[in-house]
Length: 231
Image (cartoon, rainbow, N blue to C red; front, side, top):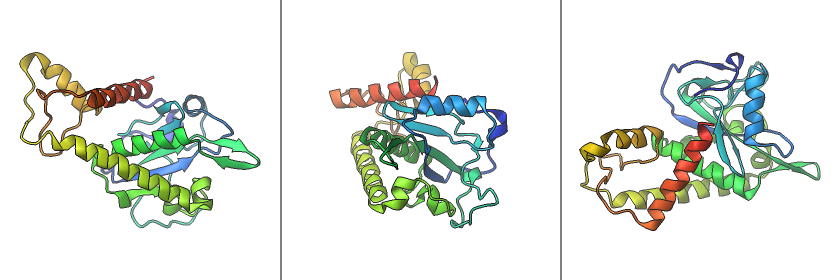
């Protein structure tokens, strides 16, 4: 559900989601909660779908609405030939500020990688369509990953590792189909819709397969993130 002020985004989309764009808030030791509140209470004619901090992430603009986050604003030069507000989801990382520089904490980077992996899986987005704001227009954003590109490359590597883990989880689903028991149909439909349970892309969900402790840990973690999104 979108909580951002109506003056900061466009309801709905004119095309499917094809890109993920990473940004920085340029805040000084800010939080996801403070950013969500700011974009709810103020008209700034800009927005993002998610804000990520050390605790997780929070949604400001619903994925099916259009955030105003990667346009030129009449100031910046368009660089990417296809990525636009209408076909992208924007993720803002909250910042630390020290010694006159912005930086991302390791936990914020970890959470951003997990959210990126989740959205890549949800929308079948390839790695080449995961971009910095700087790759879309000529804005120095996210500054820590524009000034030091090694940080951006390390982030993308981390996302790839998250995706590899996800693919390994899916190998055990082959041939299981999508047939939950009658008593579990409503709950299964909810779990699929929210992204709590993801199949292998071939219609297999493994509803009756045993759950390992590590799989349970993943489910509990995803549920905690889902609760954060809906606050």
